Image (cartoon, rainbow, N blue to C red):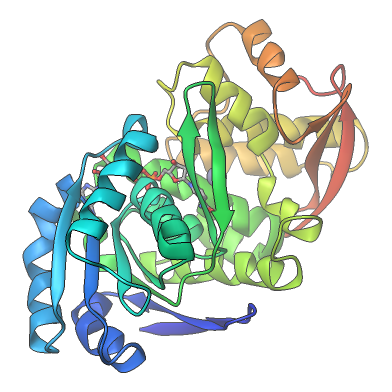
Length: 342
Ligand SMILES: NC(=O)c1ccc[n+]([C@@H]2O[C@H](COP(=O)([O-])OP(=O)(O)OC[C@H]3O[C@@H](n4cnc5c(N)ncnc54)[C@H](O)[C@@H]3O)[C@@H](O)[C@H]2O)c1
Ligand SMILES: [Zn+2]
């Protein structure tokens, strides 16, 4: 088991390793001795792993209330949010209680936002169950729901109070979801850890090490820029184009798949502009291919460029992109729409 602390305004611990969720009850009890726990669980995760979490909470004498959320991005919306608020009021949840988000990034985002806003804020504990949510979304405090015309348009910054990444949960994750999460792991290694990148290339990084490495890279950036105004944006490597690709594909591509295409394109653009060391694009695309991730967009490219106009991270005719300087280091770089090619 590995442990790190995220030093935000209220610091919190992140535990990573096989079986760490067995300690969920005891750890929640230690942090919040008299709280009731409202578990907002992804319905699939609830069916697969709910009993194990319930046992852990029971063993610690924690009063828990489980609520199953419909799975999938299509449900990261106000309807699910209202259903959550409804259940919270129904059981009389109050600010001394705790919300526990049990599922992937969708659950973390919607339950995290519900916790951030219900009664002006209830503490939240994250139990991520996908590779993407363990390696990325469970720390940093970004929570959000989608609007019909765009992703993550309503949200809040609200850091969790504890994060438990139990890598045993990954044994039931569909392979495609796993690959999608690996794209974020590759991203973190590409922008911040060359040694880990080499170990991904040689296939010698365990799940626990991969998640921990990604969280360490993200933690450093979150700590110096909690509100995502500067350095933290390096985490957007591959995302400016990635978001546009994801949306142009009508969400038939998973987030990590779209980010993989975005990263490959940005490495090439970076080399063409002389910002990225020669050979990086080849190394990155080889690794992405080895991990069975896509590196080119098969759909209509014009639709992707059109989407960039609406990218909320874009400024006028320029987009605020991230380029690698070498494997393990990145810089923010403003690109004109002409420079940003797929
Ligand atoms: N807040 C942030 O900082 C942040 C960062 C990155 C991504 N996100 C958000 O995360 C979301 C994507 O998250 P995701 O990729 O985890 O997807 P997800 O939450 O939709 O989960 C993917 C699928 O896997 C299933 N699942 C989850 N855990 C499982 C397990 N252990 N075994 C079997 N099935 C399991 C779920 O039911 C779902 O069908 C997006 O909405 C994205 O915007 C947020
Ligand atoms: Zn991402």
